[in-house]
Every structure is written in C-alpha cells, then in structure tokens.
Image 1: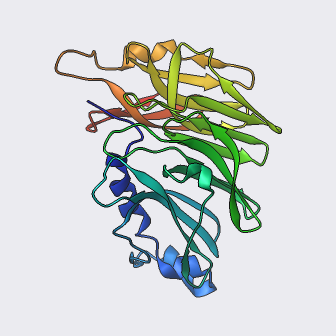
Image 2: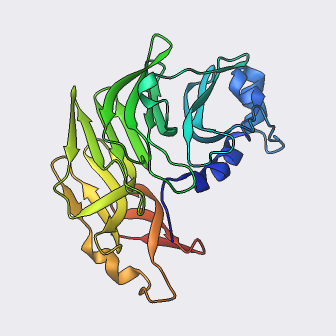
Length: 275
C-alpha cells in the first residue's frame, strides 16, 4: 500500500540534503568556482539522529533552512517540527509556533530573503497528521499565518508573497487538500473530482499537477489561471493497472505545456508525456 507524504519518504530526502557542500553555502567566490568544477566533491555539513529532514528553503547562499519532523523516542506515531538554519557561518536550531507543535514540516519554499515559507502537516509510522498550517518567516521568527484542518501536506509552490499553493493528497491518511493563497486570501478548493499531490509551475497561470481520482487512478491536471483542467489524453500513455500492477505518480516536472515529465510508480518507470 502506497502512502504519500508520510515519514517513510523522509530519510531519502535527508540524504540529498546533507550533500550540500559547506563551501557552496558560505558564498565566497572561491566556493562558487569549486562548485562549478567537475572535480567538486560532496560533504556532509549537517546531520541529526533525532529528526527526518524533508524540506529545504535556500533564499540566499547565507540563508538556508533545513526543515522536517522530529522523532519522539518510543513513540514513532508522534512527531514535532524540527529545523536548522545556516547563516553563512554556522547552523542553529529553529523554533516554531505552539499551534503546530505536534506535527512536522512537510514542505518549504522561498522566492527571496523576505519571502520564506514552511508548511506543517506530516505523519510518522503511517498515522494521520495532528495539525497543519502555513508558516512564514517574519523578522527571523516562524509565524503561523494560516491554520489548515489537520492533514498531510505533500507539496507546495511558493511563487510570490501573494501567490502560494499547498497540496495534500496522502492516499491513505487524510491529506490537507488543495489550498491557494491569492493576494491576502486563502481559498480551499474542494470542487475537483480528484486530489492533487505534487505540482510544477511554468508560471503563476500555468501549473501542472499530479494526483489521483476517487478510484485511485492517476490524474494530471493543469491550472490555467482560472480553473484546474484534467488532461484526459494521459490515460493512453499509462500501463494498464491490474491485480499485480498499481499505477500511480510520485512527482511531476513541467518544462513547457508540451513537455511534461512524470515519475510513475513502481519506480522503474519514468514517463515523458508530450501533451
């Protein structure tokens, strides 16, 4: 049984995080040259045995946020928000609002040093999320700016201070659903006959997302600036599901409206859909 957005995926993402080179984070000219070099090597710059690191926001070379879910010893079904901040010289531990104290950070994004977001809503050991919400960094402190109904956050898109998308299709445990910040108003989009889990943006009015319908059949849909439209031609490109084959998606990358890539599970499949 496939569970999206739960703790079982986080260690893999943490492994990608610790590959960040400290020289690259420091932001010196020599560091930039080293990163560009084909001889550059990867170094562990931060690690923890008490949390899964699943989200990364790097608005500048001297400001990197590594966020995730803390582990409660002896109680794998519980978690708490965990974060580390790189200030260009050292790592410090982050603190979070009490309103999301019993869940972890599932996604983060930034468009610049003054527009940094994190989204709470994770589960451990396949359980439901205890809380969910949108956090924004204000004067160096994380503030809960929008509380969602408790659910799992599977992905997010931070496109500007007034254009943010939050996706939550956890497949088994309840997801947070689909939320959109437009201007200063958060809207819960509940009218779609399917749930969306991950997305990739070409522009604010051109977003591709993947998810599934009520029969757990994979779905791809496009936001055109006014509404979400399902791409029905996708069905012809997918393998036919059977009792021994589950067809689903676990990621999407949109390069243009006619060049969209999907990762199909089982993970041996990658589909390129020319739409």
